[in-house]
Image (cartoon, rainbow, N blue to C red; front, side):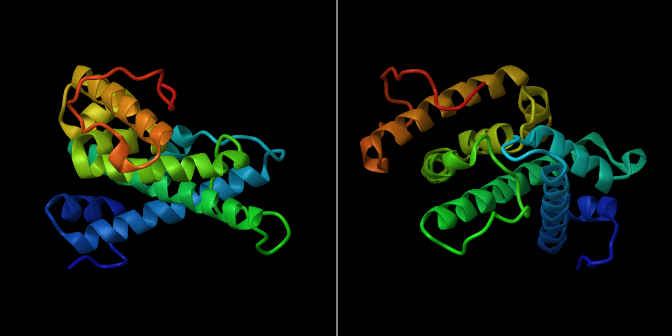
Length: 209
């Protein structure tokens, strides 16, 4: 059983060995670290400045891990958890913005999460997240690539390292997932979207490469 005082490298080894408690502790540390980093960055910038999710994920990694003791597989596992933690940090910010728009408590949104490209895109981010969960129901593999790339800001090479696939395979999965998500967000419900594998062309994707 993982201890809450265990160092991050030990937790990584335990998590990769299948210890769910170690994985949960490690995820919690990443999530907390990303929130702290985001809050500090936002306070140092003028209103409206966008934060770089890639930079935050990598900074959290560097602050948490002893690189002399971590293997490439451990590094990949940590980046995978960091990408998921960043997803929840981003969604927390978007939900806070939506509550504010609906007439929630007045005043500025606390600097407790990441500011996305623009706060007015919060609804779009939440819609994309819902579409991502529908995609996960059809392909865990494609949903995983989106989480790593879009929310974690990982490069194709880092996603390949985290998943054990080739860079070319990751690039193909990313393009396929982007197309499906664009169609899902444009057409609105899960029943309106063709299942993966069906023919059909779609206009440009909703997410940047």
